[in-house]
Image 1 (cartoon, rainbow, N blue to C red):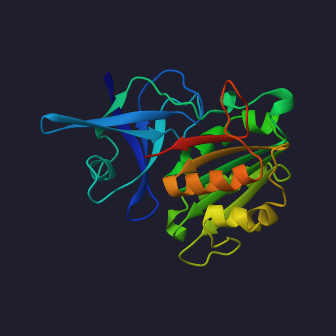
Image 2 (cartoon, helix red, strand yellow; image 1 turned 120 degrees about the horizontal axis):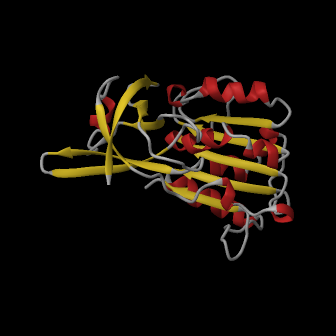
Length: 249
């Protein structure tokens, strides 16, 4: 089921990375969920899932996307401008949400977000709500990209730093060029050698940490392996753990 949305704003972060704000009513959703965008191309409908960057309660949706050269939909999305229309699914879905994490004595004191590229989107949505700040003593965002231009939403992330200076820890990693204050390693490597924890000033542990991971499959697999070696386990409803994962592809 699709409804028509209208683009109200577009932000280009680099030559391939962009955000779209789309005026559409998809009803209630939970921060961390995703929505499908779609177009009829020829006689075939092409739909792709994109995490929502905006928090619940807005009268628009916002998605962060990268245009893939041989992609079936993303190059078309990149050329959309204010006033253009796009088909949007009627309801958001997904289970990488804060209410899926363990509660009370099993949740730990520290919430870690590990993201690469466009996967930072759902974590920005979560951080724009009160929930992480009310439920965890420390919130850590580890955000890995290849180039500085890929650091989407950096001004908004800096605003979280200013609003929660004692509570929020930001660890940036840019692997292909220098950026002041950033690491230059893959996230799994930074976990293995301790650089990420040193930068955050917080130790990762099964007792104190909840870790949400979203990004490219290689990062997810390698980061999970590192965390499991430390005794962290995948979070399941039937067996609460410390690792929650969303696979983008």
